[in-house]
Structures are given as C-alpha cells and as structure tokens.
Length: 343
Image (cartoon, rainbow, N blue to C red; front, top):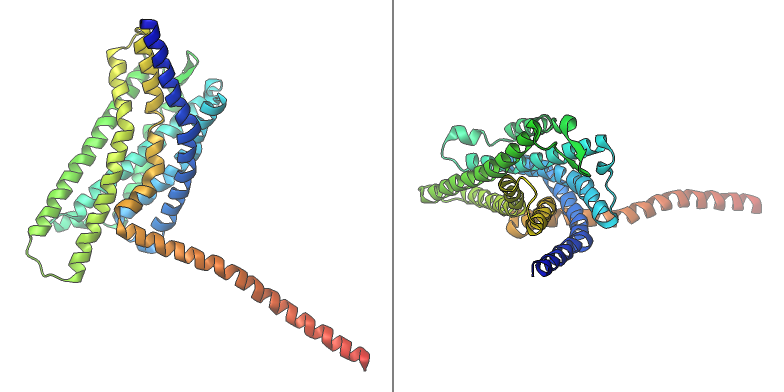
C-alpha cells in the first residue's frame, strides 16, 4: 500500500514538474519579457517618472527582466536539458546564488517601498506627503539596490557544492543565517506590505469623509491614487501567493531537519522545487496585472502603441522620400547629359 502511494505521488509530482518545465515556464519567459519591456517603455516616460510610485515600478520592471533572462533561463536549461553549471563550478554556484537572491530582494523591496509611498501620498500629514516625491524615490531606489547587493554578499564566500547540489553548508552559521534571513524576508516584507495597505485604505476612507471643494483636480488625484493602490494590491497578492510556499518549506525543514520517510522526503523535494519555480510566475505577470487593474495604465499603453505604430508607418515614408531625393537629381543629371549628346 505504501509503495503504491509513493509511486502515485511520484507520478503526480513528475507530471507537475513536466508541465512547468515544458509549458508554463517557457510561456512565462516569452510573455514576461514582452510585458516587462512594455513596462519599461511606459514607466521610463517623463510623465511617468514624475510620479514616485511609478519609479518603484520601474525599478521592479528592470530587475524582472534580469530575473527572467538569467534565473529563469538557467532553470529552463536545467529542467529541459538537465544542464546545471552550478553543480560543477563553485564560482558559478556562488555567483548564481548571489545574483538570484539579490534580484529577488530588490524586487520585493521595490514593491514594499511603493506601498510605503502610496501610504505617504494618501496621508493627511503634509510632512508625509512631502516624502512621496520623485527625488525621494530616486534616493531610496539607489539605497535598495546597494543594500541588496551588500546584504546578499555572504553567498559569494560561503555557498558551496555539497550532496550534488549548490547549497549553504549544513549545520553551519551561514546556513542558520540564510534560514533566519529567508524567514524574516518571507514574513516581515509581506507583513509590512499588508500594514501599509491597511493604513493607506484608512487614509482613503478619511479622504472620502473629508469635506473638500468638489473639482476635477481633487477628483482626478483621488482616482489616480486609488488606481495605483489597486495596481499595488494586485502585485502584493500575487507576490504573497507565489512566495508563501518557500516560507512553508523553511518551516518544514526546521521541523524535519533530518531525512524522514520516503513520502516526507518526496514532499520536501517537491516543495523546494516549486518554491523556486512559482516566483517566476510573479516576475512575468506585472504588466498584465497593471493592464487589468488600472484604466490609467491602459491609457498610457494605448498611447505608447499608437506612437509605435506611427513611428513604423513613418519609416517607409522617410525611406521613400530619401530615395526620391537621391533619384531626382540623378535623373536630372542623366537628362542633361543626354541633351548635350544630342546637341
């Protein structure tokens, strides 16, 4: 009975892994790159850079592209072709771990600071609203990137290849550090996002109850703040759903530190595999979440697509006009030369 259960469990896990490796992750790679490139074009425009919240989205989009084209590509190569340089090269093992963990942290901190920014922007306090400025966002984004690269630097020294895997050395101080760090990140960052979201919601309720002159400027400001909060909420929920399994796995590894029965070992291997796979769904979904949740973002997207279509329409016209400019003088010279010969 136990053997049959293990066999069926193995079949189910293998089918799920096959679906991710051959169908879901390749689709995420293609759609994610397209979506994040469009995010860059929209958020990098001067009108978008004048909004501090969109600067954090720009930071998240930049790092999303790197994650998809570095971390996800390596995962696809490993899943499809069973090739993983991190299992044979120590320097690559450390570099991959360092860059991957740094990128994940930059993304999550960018979204967290975007939540803090919306909390400040919706506050009644003039001092807090002053913190929701592009200048402040630029400084904080630089801080996020520098802090993340420094915070993950121990991986360049202590990560190693053991048991045929690229891991932190078991029963070491560094292993304890990475476990506690991952738990803190997995709990504190989502919890901070939720707290900022609740405070922002209270601020919006207060704004609705406040007696203010009804004019288009105030109405549009509230509407834009509400839409950006909706965009953030969609990303926060997706981030929680895609990363919660890793926190569950860490708790599981603390409960079962030593090898257990075959069933528990199978479940553990599947959990660790999926905990490093599901976040790629989040990194590829940002553009589509923005498009579905925000009319303002959709209008920016339509304007961008119209400009791109106009640009491509102008290219043949410009080419033809340049061709004609060169052709007409040559034809005139040829006609003049012909006339001279006849005379």
